[in-house]
Length: 104
Image (tube, rainbow, N blue to C red; front, side, top):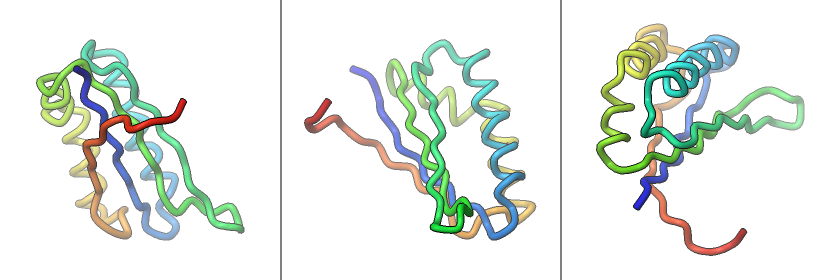
């Protein structure tokens, strides 16, 4: 059974581009180095003026070990440290494990 995750990333005001760059590095590394990562899609949620309020990441892994491999990866930890050390986030990263309930 696959593991599905929704991660919410909240960039600090004016730091949206730096957050996007950090996330893009994780996406590229996951695609290249994590065969157990089946999906890693980043969406942006914007306010009425077009400012990015939040990045929503939909992730899917073959199993829990593949997820653990992802959060243990050099790219993930480098990006996480960058986001935290440079105070690029308005609030803490949220990670939720989810199950499909219904819909198409």
